[in-house]
Image (cartoon, rainbow, N blue to C red):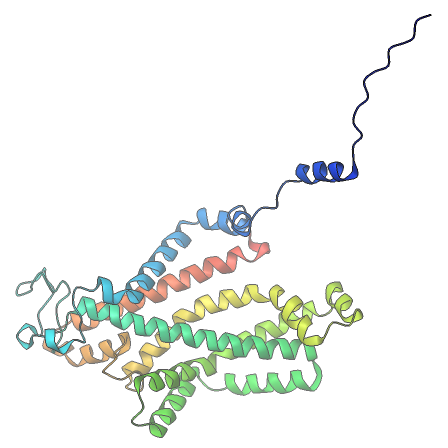
Amino acid sequence: MTTAATPPATPPTTAAHAATTATAAIPAAPSAWARFFDGDVWHSFRSSPIAMIAAAMALLCVFCALFAGVISPHNPFDLATLELSDSMLPPAWLEGGQHKYLLGTDEQGRDVLSALFYGARISILIGGASVIVSVLIGVGLGLLAGYAGGAVDSFIMRVCDVMLSFPSILIALLIAGVGRALFPQAHDSLAFGVLILAIALPGWVQYARTVRGSTMVERNKEYVQAARVVGVPPGRIMLRHVLPNVLGPVLVLATIHVATAIQTEATLSFLGVGVSPTSPSLGTFINEGNKQLFSGAWWLVIFPGLMLLLIALSMNLFGDWLRDALNPRLR
């Protein structure tokens, strides 16, 4: 009598082994950078030559401004290196110009190209800081007005209406004038703070109105209602749930308002209520060059004006692209 051969026994599969196999089969989640480069915004950026050129110009201007002490051929604020015999020299390609002063010199013998880099740094820092202050004030009040509603919303919106009834440049002039009167011997850092506040206060209104409208839409959605039901505090709902969903328009406004803030700073400096002459910005250079314009020193006005135009134009073009890229209806 023969017996049937039994197949070799297979080792039992444990629960831990099965869990390990299932885990290994799940692909790792892509990183944030990978999701960004695979997203619609990066694809829109690569397919827009205007956006790429504007971003390149803006980055070049910011790089030259931030690293002015490294790439500038001269230090225009080092009195020991200034030569009065080299004052009012034309650009290097004109008769009488020198190659070491590519864009010429001013009445103190300062190199115009180096002065542009240092002046752009001050203008960009003041413009960027004022936009940050405006965003913080406007987004905070807009979130509060849109989420709370009622009397709080009415009060904040009436303050916005009052602010909009005055020209922004007039408010900036008033704040800058009062600040200079209260602190006539103020240090440059305090003068910068007054100027940043003068530019920021008229600019928060647009952020507040934009965020308020988006918050009023978001507060009635299901995820906000669910957070309320489980007892999440209102402050946490606004900051962790509502705020990330209303930042798109804020980014667009902030990008465009950087150019506006830089132009406002240049206007205030041109009118004599901006930064001090010891730390001149682009507006101060244009103001000083305007005094020498009728003597034939056109380069003291043209080149700072072109630098200001380049910064503002690149920021505006990049902001226009960002508005279209973040708006799904325009894709």
